[in-house]
Image (cartoon, rainbow, N blue to C red):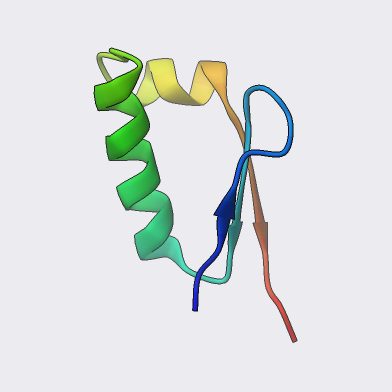
Length: 52
């Protein structure tokens, strides 16, 4: 199971699933009118956390 949350402005945490990260990037680009991945990564800080 993957959980995606946005706890603070401009921060996304993805738990243990890179495919979900891809989907979230695409969705945010569309909804916030971000033109490309470079612009996305300038606006958001990504944390990948593996759950044991």
